[in-house]
Picture (cartoon, helix red, strand yellow):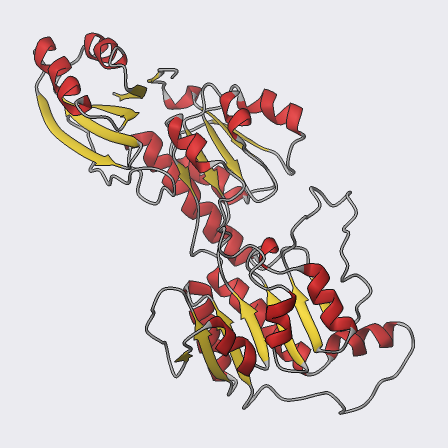
Length: 411
């Protein structure tokens, strides 16, 4: 395992932001004293990405940039990754952890934006707006009440009752909807929402089913032909969670057979890498289906919240080593270290490592003013505030410990 020390002045730390991350993130870094911040408006081709990240210390991405284990191996200086979005499945989290790289995201920053989009889609689907809109663009005047319903008194079924799902339920109740929900973790209802005993109970009883689940082995393909068949005749399906949750061919078949009256899909199993790449889906041409290009969180407010949230976490980790909010790393919340030097040691979680670390300080005759330790099954993270002006011998000793992954030193 490569062992690296990191002790750079802020003006030498290189930060690369990809995919058009909002300028408020750049401003946050600059206010914190980081001047070498570069922002790129799109994702990069794989070869260019490998070249660019080899010389940066912090990387900010959104959903289109893929950081595989092999790509991360090319990033010899990379110290932290910020996913300026909710999801982190575009990063090999275990590989990043094994290289001593914490990954941060913004799990709650776009909650309201996604909930509002789903609520709007619910109203439009129940009124048959997508097909009527398409007909009007072709010059056809479909003024009819057939197949058009108020949402008041109808049942919204929410699968995944986390921050987005629960807020959606509150908003839907404001329109007079009955809300039922299912989550694999037992959660108390907000408002008048009613918990269901199973996902099937939600599918069988809801007029509109909205999905709000993460991308996991258990959720991929969770809504296939059998699950869609369980839904009420004439119901609607909304997916603004993860693209691999719903079988698109099965959904297209259900729409074409009129088992489902409509759907709204914001995420897809395969999405274009840029606006110049064609969007391909079996749902194209289905006029009673709303297709949106992964924009659930694409509002000014959400992107500003995300930019500030993730940039703040990266600055905090760079400045004082705090890993609060990291999705793949031992979480340590640290005080300021204005009166001491701070050394951070990332290591394989093996017996005897902490003793070896303490032996290094003991042999060097350096007092440890404070020590913070947190571990995961495979990686440990220990932070030490020390009283010395010469940390060189200690850093060399820490790097000689066989389990060392990375050592960082903050003056």
